[in-house]
Amino acid sequence: MKRTPSLHFATGTAFLTAAVLAPALIRAQQGPPPGPPGGQRQPGAVASTGKKENFVSITIEGDCRVIQSNGWPDHAPGAFPRRGNPNTAAPQNYVFRVPLKPRAAQEPSRRPGWFFAVAVNGVPFEPGTAEAWHNDRRSGWRYEANTGFLDLGLDEHHAHVQPTGAYHYHALPTGLVERLGGDGKKMLLVGWAADGFPLYTAFAHGDANDAKSPLRKMKSGCQLKKGPRLAAPDGPGGNYDGRFTEDWEYVQGSGDLDELNGRTGVTPEFPGGTYYYCITDEFPSLGRAWRGTPDPSFAKAGGPPAGRGFGPPPGGPGGPGGFGGPDGRRTNRPPPPGFPPEGPPPR
Image (cartoon, rainbow, N blue to C red; front, side, top):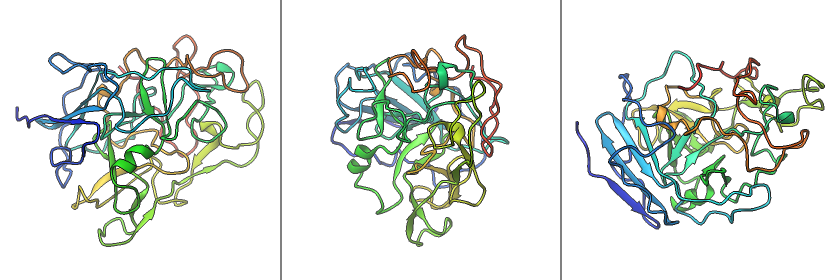
């Protein structure tokens, strides 16, 4: 097995080096061996020191990029606990594995409760929330974290903290973007999705296949549905306004990106072209499914979030809900129109 020397980064250092970047052209190839579930530390991995300073190590092992980190950002996080989020941020022990040569699956992959991606500073991305209408995980109505209706205590970097102490991003990691030189000057690689495809900010070439074409901000193809929601007991009622994931639908051709918030084109790291995801200002911010097959190392230890430790959502008493039912069962409610169907449950 070929292995490059580890690249260890501490606070204040640059991240985008040759070993971080994948080969220029993605070719079809069998995916990598599974990684440990939940980003858990595997035997022989260097454990977090517990210090509240950024640590990330990126190595190339065979056909995999292995990203080991303590999950602490390379920028000052917001103050936690805070209103809407009573949790205290703490260093973690993560080991994420992504294929160097990812390939598209026949159908988009969905894994409820998994991290979507990991940033180049080692902090994970998670687009969805555990909060559900009436705290009923079977209701099919999931609250959104980044549309302004539910206070989950997001800081200025669009991040907050899980009950485990895990700091994670829900949208554009503004502090990381600033440390990487700012946005809009070039296509900016900020992370790797669980299926191995790269994750960029919203700025991309107007002509996807022309690296000399001007940059412009990509827009999502998702739009608010029109009219009222289902009324109780089948839904929360009221008009679609964006507070629930189910308030949105993908409309083909209405934006620059596909239903997974991605597109295919050239990038600085992939001049021969690749599929890539973008982080948009508008919903969904981050993709809710993967074009390829996500590595099991992005499954959170212990399964989907239980939602404990956040303020209760409006419209329901008590603690928040989450993926599946209160007893762990999964809802049979179909995904919003235009979104890919749910795949097999995580193992």
